[in-house]
Length: 275
Ligand SMILES: [Zn+2]
Image 1 (cartoon, rainbow, N blue to C red):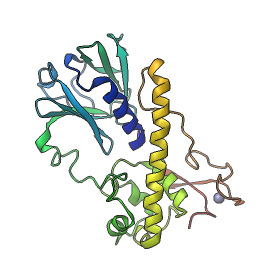
Image 2 (image 1 turned 135 degrees about the vertical axis):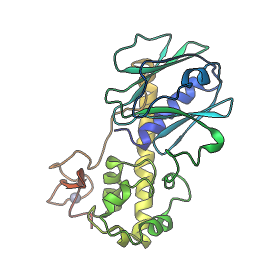
Image 3 (image 1 turned 180 degrees about the horizontal axis):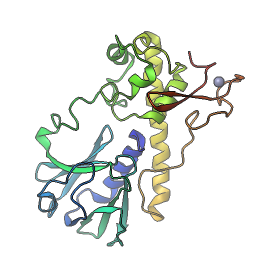
Image 4 (image 1 turned 135 degrees about the horizontal axis):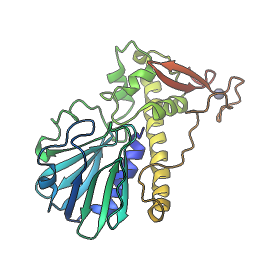
């Protein structure tokens, strides 16, 4: 499932191809993905200029020249494919958007948990999809003090609390595991006990794992540009995620990397290093 760094990479790829272009072709090939497309989806997009593209949590926000915003979420398996000229569409290619210079973007989503919808720019903060999201972890206000404050009183394991999008927007299972490892905090530790220096360590670890992944995405974007046209997925080098039984990269512990299941999700961690 794409998390913040993958979505950020997709945004950067789209920005390079679509900003200042005029949308002159839109095809929607089914009535819905996770939610229905708006009835007037196609006419509202046609003829619009793309002003800018940014991201909030895992949502891609494409700002158009009439004050509306195309909101896109990739769900579990959604992908955006870019091509010069009209592509051949397969059964899982649900939306096609083409611009005046011949660039085409296809939304491909096998499991259809993704979505595309339209909102007014002025209503964005209050939009049901976006209201209630916590701070962006890469923003300057996301720090140890913020984490201490939002974790206070939460009597649940820190790993689960980090997946709550009202605590931290856009981070999912993979980067929560990685951040806890780098901050040397046990995934089982009570969230409310993560405060002070420990919360500061965690805030820094979150930023650092995300920034590294985004820069890896940036280099893969340059490689991908010539080949598949697919945005946002790249070769990762995770320290713990998916590495059960492997040696721990940052310590000489005997234990190696262990896996445990918390709220139905796998957590990967080092029981020696993380307390
Ligand atoms: Zn270790």
